[in-house]
Length: 227
Image 1 (tube, one colour):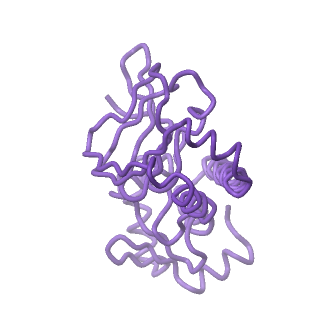
Image 2 (cartoon, one colour; image 1 turned 90 degrees about the vertical axis):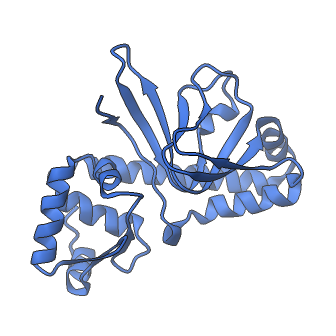
């Protein structure tokens, strides 16, 4: 059955959230013996809805999807995570609210829930990095909500490049172009047509997994952004 995209959280290697990197580094200093490296295989379920939270996960490389299954049996995609902490509510919840599944082979760090709580309570640096990370996530979620209100595929794509890219008009694609379509909330066919049209107009270059907006269009977008 088709996935219903609701929200996504995608980070590329060029735009790794510094707040979460600082957080992980601080936790490594404080609880290095308790951190666990996890090599998740594609399709591996990390946790299921209703289970008692034991670990808080941090994606280093790969992709994890948080999803629920409707009463009709359709999977509902809640989040796509390619870098950073996810399932944050599990820190204070009695059970996971959804299931976490590795979409591709994924490298993660697993942090015991109790250790994370103790670190937040006892280490002001961890506490403030956690607050900053949550604040950055909230800003990114607002940007996604704004993007999904845009009418055209082109507008959504330009918005994604300007808000999620490193600022030079480039954006690294997620694992597949299908994943990019899901990120934008559009059909794969509409995305492919838009990419082809932009390339034909010399507004967009695609080099492997890198989308590169042309310098002139990028500058015009910054002065008068279409989104």
